[in-house]
Length: 132
Ligand SMILES: [Zn+2]
Image (cartoon, rainbow, N blue to C red; front, side, top):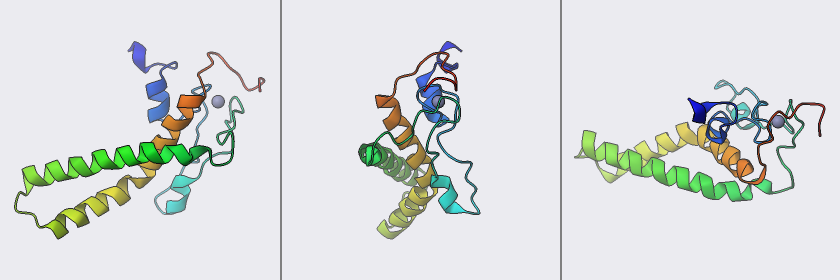
């Protein structure tokens, strides 16, 4: 598939790869046993040395993307509840949304930052570690 190759920004974002070379990982390999590790970001790309926090507070704007993801998640949970369990109470809905939001937090955090940095850092085809 042509849109799902090395040059694909969508693929790079979904896998949280470096926006510049689409090769290096933006995040450390987190594990569920150490939840904080799921949010640990590398300082720069292992492959092309692109800094992942170009300036302090760079990811402030990623909050808005995160907000959009969470809104989509809430709507999805609400629609599913209406389909699968229409007699739910408000408390059940809130608890279900709360659990879904906590479970999705690491993914939404990573995707939001991945999308945000991809807006500002363009892909450079064939870039290697020797270049800075
Ligand atoms: Zn890179």
